[in-house]
Length: 347
Ligand SMILES: [Zn+2]
Ligand SMILES: [Zn+2]
Image (cartoon, rainbow, N blue to C red; front, top):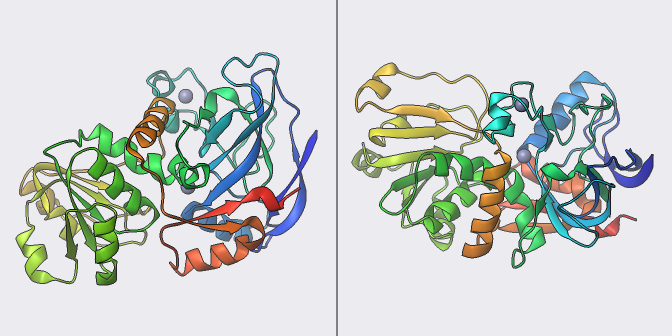
């Protein structure tokens, strides 16, 4: 086994403590990555809370990271020591099902192996995430980090970024498309940047009027406060695509009513049951969809696009020793728009 250092929650705990961690020895198609930066995702909070309730095994969160290759297995062809890489929330899949064959490893019918809390497909061990100094990953699930992308600001692209990128592309967003992004957080601020860079007319719908200036700085052409009844009424049937990144359970009705005829509400921010009035779909022949994470081809395309268009996350960079503070502040929504941990304080 290889050993590294990371931030681990012991059984029954949500607080993370510095601990020695084991990584597997490199298999033929593995690379070892020195993790330089890892984003702090809402899923990490949910995982820690679920973990504390279950009291099973230790948990190391972290599933959007960038770093540097430090070692390669004997069969590795795409990477060499010293290469800059990026890894997201999926580190393996079956590779043979219909979803994998079409490059949608995120929808693998045998369920993709998650970067943490997943079961390794070869030895069955539980994967431990990237709040750590080193990760060992199949080369197929690592991406070259294009030159010109800041490695700290690029880390959140690997989960938050691709989660909004894939639906925007699948829904054909581009010049002439009218897009609204509901919720301006980790997902939402990247959805705005992507939609603007793709050439769409982009509006932000926010419950926090104080975010209007930020929305415009991110490139939004218009901002609607969801409390403004006049503006929301005037936006009825207006948007080809509404990207809903609101992270708590909420009524979809007000957003569906802003979708144009034959347009789509893409519901991304909150996993859980939703209630829909079918008349909100019937009137205007509207579509309701969802998405999560991304396949390997879409992730690679996103990174190229980001390098070309200078798109990355707005981050607050903290030394990894402040990880518990980052999680507390994320819980209280006190971040614009993503915490990223700098792992250089780990041995
Ligand atoms: Zn995530
Ligand atoms: Zn599969």
